[in-house]
Length: 158
Image 1: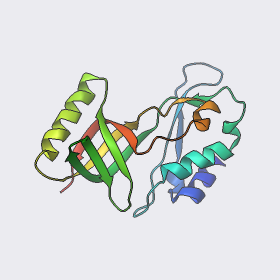
Image 2: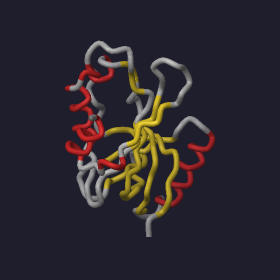
Image 3: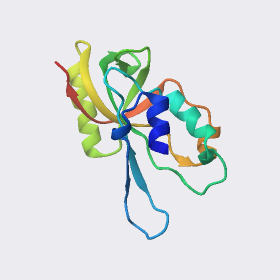
């Protein structure tokens, strides 16, 4: 049911929606939900936020969200205020920040170097900052704009 709803609402390929249970306990457990947009389409994080808010997850459940990781294609731009990613195909932007791990710090430094002199087209993987918590408190908080993205990896797009 969730697979069809996600595919219908967000221009997501139905066969790309996968839930993988981590099997850490025999009861309810953490899992990873993975999906990708249809070719030429984008997933709007505001709409995703609104639809979860409208679902039963927004009410009294004991579940929550550990992280929201995204893969974005766009242009990395070095500004006076720091690094930004302008998403290809829309007006959305992310503020890029260094992640806490050594590997993430290295990826951020390499990205900053690549974008220092010019706009750099990249395929970037990152974690949406401060987007975690238990329902419904997670969805009662206002969404920070522009969103901050902790850089975990990137590759140049030619």
